[in-house]
Length: 416
Image (cartoon, rainbow, N blue to C red):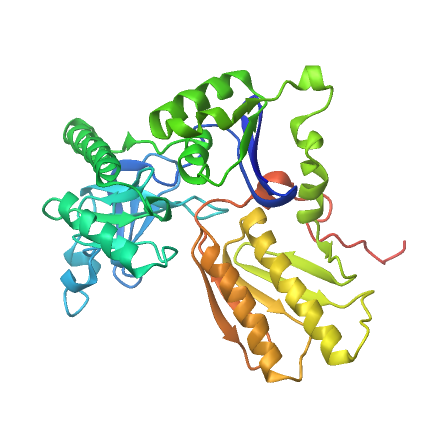
């Protein structure tokens, strides 16, 4: 049984996805208008830094946005110049530019922006100037990949590009074509607004969490969708009738007052969230994970703890590491961790066991909706991977830095 739970409280919206009662995904937004990723702005170049091959662009957010040269060049690699030019040849201070946010402002850093525009739809992603058709790697059947790639080639016009999402598998050309037409019209309206807007100005706002969840997460394998906010429930009904009418019957309104318990408590989500965001996570076998997260780097330490096994040390270590790989993959999605991730698995003598652990994590990475790349073992025996970082992760939204210790969590041993 796969369920999606959407808990709304004022401007806060939290979404949890459960598989047979176990939490596998979690998203949250402070308001339907708080996210910046996907927004399109008309900005003004403030400064060009040839030494960094980057420019800073004022898009009206207080902190200037960062634009790297690779995000100025043509999105199709084959159409880029053989030798990368200086950024001073492409943009000048004072120049007005249409850009799209690809990464939220985080800490002291402003948003990162690009000119490689993408507009996501239900079945595909529309790219107005990419010039190619791509297919999700999660669509495995070669015959289906070829079919929807050919449809994409027929649908795109001129320099347009299309990426067929995983949800496009099995869809008819009529549905895919309707998606393209809607996104093409949206891009046309963005361009029309840009002609008259005075920089800095917002030209397009990406959908809020509710619409994104319905569009991206609510698929045919979702058995139930529960919402506890009547207004958001009505909005979700309208969205489903617009996007996928056959799924509208799976929406259910949870009446907390009548149930005398919250939606998340009713399905056991609250305790699972607290456990998932703690610094020490216990594994079912008795082993544990110690999780240490900074702005740019996440370090995870795997321990056998109370798990002593039944056969031998190598077998105990291997079983703990395999269980840890599964749990780490789940927690990376729930916590929405981005950046560099280093995992200190328990040392294994058997090389084939090391390969199996890495293969297990790589298998999960392929299923992750966020791009995740496993690089392999370092010379120190650590496993390295990266996960795309676009929004501030849930851990930082759910927690506050302690004003007394600055977040170190250590008590002074000095006595007065």
